[in-house]
Structure formats: structure tokens, C-alpha cells
Amino acid sequence: MGNVQMIDLIEENLEEHGCFCLRSQPNSTGYIQKKKWLLKRLGEGLKYIKLMESGKQAGFIEYTPIEHSSRVVYGENYLVIHCLWVSMTGKGYASELIKKCIEDAKRQNKDGVIVITNPDTSWTPSKDIFIKNDFIEIDQAPYGFELLVHKFNHAPSPFFPNDWDERLKQFHDLTLLRTQQCPFVDVATENMLAGASQLGIDATIIDLTHREQLLRLSPTPYGIYGVVYKNKLVTYHRLTVHSAKKRLKQLI
Image (cartoon, rainbow, N blue to C red; front, side, top):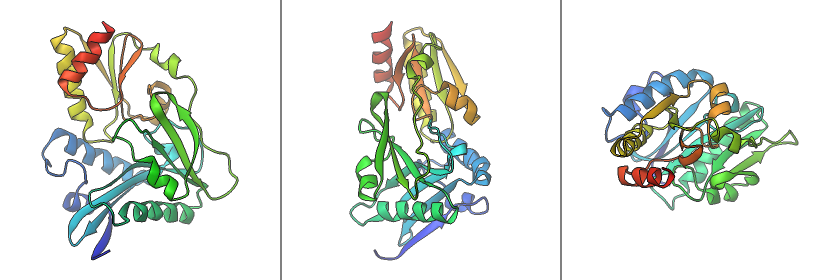
């Protein structure tokens, strides 16, 4: 696989190596917020591992203990993969990163590794690569979300909540719920606010800073970003200003 190196981001090298996503815009609000978020989470057991080929960024994986995860899933003693991305495909890098996580979970005496996928968006990892690495699908949620697990033993399986409709009923006014786990959330927020402004719609932003809050309020398993208007889900990923305006108009 050439000259390949895996770099585990820690507080001491975060400034030097930085994050993978939005790395071409290190002064952007989203990138800065992501670094701040990482600094807080590294002490909770979060791992952010960059894969380098001949000094060039080829991919990364981010995972964390379930009790600190930004995904809306219940369970104990699992690692949760937040993100997996490779820019140099066809070299087996995605599988190498997944294996790295699985090995780490075994060292930590976890019961397994889980990941949330969705075929309708690129904001979640692809399901196929996890099936290839012996994950199995064990649960589903509205809007196409799937829960996959790689278990080491017969421990209880993690699971999704089942109160998604009730969650939406909490928000009649336009509400954006977000964390800073993804650097693109800032752009997603700006685009939604711009579209809403053009329609004369005021918006409320709820920054989810605690897992208990996220588990209670997030409208989807994704957890990072969700927009609700008139008790309906508008989106759980970034939209253009035009698309945001179009979806909101459908609910007016």
C-alpha cells in the first residue's frame, strides 16, 4: 500500500496535523469549532486517526465510547464510529481503518463496534464497507437510518429509540438542533437560516452540548444536525439555500 502511516490525533499534535474535513479552510468557523470540539472530546476516549500515504491525507476514522457519542443509540460497552472517509479509493484503506477501530475495541474489552449508516446521504459512512468487514444490521429508524454492529460476544445489542414521532411534536417553530462534531454544520446552519430569512421565518438554534440532551431531543439517530419545522423533519444534513427555502415552503 505504499508509504502508509496512521496518525492518532492528540492534544499535542492537533494543531500540527489538524482534521481531515474542511482542511483547506483552516480559518473557517466550522473548522475552528471542530478543533475546539475535538480538544474537549479527546479526554473522553475519542479517537481521530488520519491515514497518510506518502505524506498526503488519504482518509480518516473517528470513533468514541458510546456513552460520549454524538449518535442517538442506546447501549453499553461499545465503540461508536462517527465518521469514516477515504479520498484514495481502491487501496483497502477504509477496511484498514475499520480494523484499527475493531482492534482498539478489543484492547479496551468492549463488546463490539457499532456504526449508523444511511443510503440517502453521504453524511454517513457507506453500509457496504462495514458488511464487508463482518458488521450486521440489527435495527432501523425512520428516514433510512440503519444500525450495524460488529460484536465480539453475546452481550446485549445496542438499539435505536422508538419515539421519533413524539420528538418532532416538541418543535412547531423552525428549530435547528446541532453539535459541533462535524465542521460542515456551520455552513448547513447558515444556509438554512438564509433560506428561512427569505421566507420571513424566524429560527431557534439549540446547541446540544450533553449526551442526555441529545438522546432526548435529536429528531434522528444522526444527532449532529437536525432541522424541524411545524413538527416535521426538514433535513438532517446540509442543504443549499435554494433547497432549504424549497423544503420550508412545502411546510408553510
